Length: 184
Image (cartoon, rainbow, N blue to C red; front, top):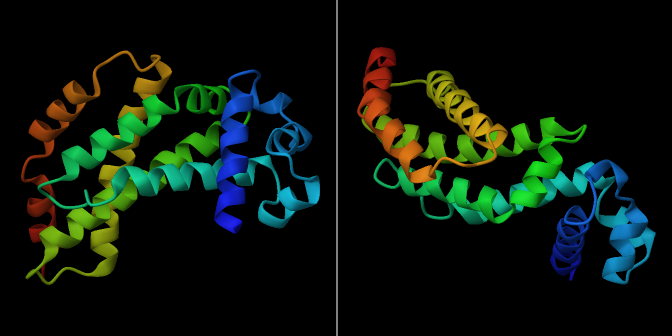
């Protein structure tokens, strides 16, 4: 029942974001739309930003399911773009609000989840420490998120497939090369 309530609150938040900016949405707006009381909201979330973060993480998990390997990272990254496009009013509203950091954290979380899977796979058989693997995943995470933030800033006009194709050419074999440089 807890997940159902959380999902209903997330849906209500997204619906409210179609009508007004995040900073004008109240907990009352969200709970009234769900037909629950304020205490039920606070049972699940500490504030609206906590709900925003939970919603982003849930979307991230769905977007990346089964696409965290070297052979499927492009599909996983495309799924991130698609999740953003499907939630464009939500993302744009949060991006342009006082909690832009929430969008960045959302993208960092999604992208790191994708990249660490690829790095771990490519590191098999190599003697590379966890610190170094994390560093490599972080390096690519920041590059990928920078590209996505620029795409969002430019109103998501460029075709995500074109962006992914460019990235694919740019990093082809680079993760493996980086891991080999750190291997002892």
